[in-house]
Each structure stands twice: as structure tokens, then as C-alpha cells.
Length: 221
Image (cartoon, rainbow, N blue to C red; front, top):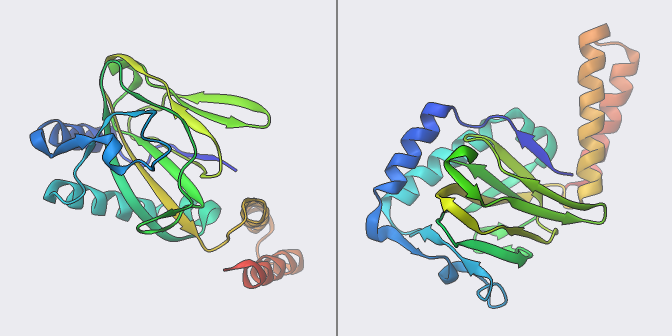
């Protein structure tokens, strides 16, 4: 299951963050430095040095925003939100077809996310394309919006043809390892909340809550 957080950051927050990133100068490093051995051949972008103070400040700010968002808790069940990167792609840069590593330095990658820091009218090309059995989906997100999707999917970032694309990307180790289980739990939780709004805490609500809670006990890893 994939889902959108619309938005995670305000326009003002994105503008301020993008300006700080553009002034980072030599702290931008070739993206190949963090790519796996099989992805280096198709990765052409720049990423902010994870050791620099700006990265550490911005990553902490974003992790806090993600941890506090209710949809993140309801749909992703995060144990850890980790390995954040800030990526900059100019004309001719992108990231070819690849799958994310199963393990990062910060933990297992069950879900990936991309947060747009620039609006799509500021660059051409640069779509994030997800592949699934039902076909391909392309996304050019508004600034401040985040897409969360299974790390198991093949995906790519189309080359930017003009302008500059700034995004933050990262990974989630979920307390619920399997995507079909996360989806079922999300649907049950959505249903019980809607029922509570309509009818309050009645017998049916209690039964759904019991099933939801006991499935959490069974499936949490």
C-alpha cells in the first residue's frame, strides 16, 4: 500500500528549507557515494553530506514531523524512521531503475518515502515512477507533500530536463513487517474510527477494536 501525506510541511517551511540547502555549497556530494554496488551505474544526482551540521539539523526536523503525523502511525506503524537523505537533481540528472536495499545503516527498509521540497513548476522532468504488477505510476509532488510506498517496488527518477529538483528521501522500519497486514490493520482502524464518530462506543466498536488490537499482538515483529 502506498499513501500520500498532503502536506507534511507548509509552503513556508519548504521555502526556508530549500534556501538553506541551496546555500550548502561543498556539503553536496555525488549521489553515487551512498548507492549500492548495483545502483551506482544508474544514479546521477547530488546528496547532502550526512555528516554536516545542516543535514543533521534538517533530518531531525523532518523525522519529528513524520513521527507526529497521524497517518504515518495509522498506515506505516513505524519502529524507526531512518537514513534520511537530501537529494538535488539538476538538468540531465536522475536515478535509473532500481530497488532499495533491504537493510540500511539505520535499520530495515519496509517503506520508502519521498518528500518534495520544490514545486513541480520549478523544474521539468524528474518524475518519481513506481512499478507494480498493475503498471507504472508517475509522481511530481507539490512542495511539502510526501509519498510513502513499499521499498520492495522497482522505481526510478526520470532525468530532470531543466530547473532543479530538491527532495528528502528516507526509509521506515515498520513494526508490522508485511504490507498486506499493514493494509488490513489500516482499514480496520479507519472503519472503527468512522463507526465511533457515527455511533460512539457500542458493542460493534468494541468487537472491531478487540480484533484490531489482537491482530497487532499477533503480527508485531
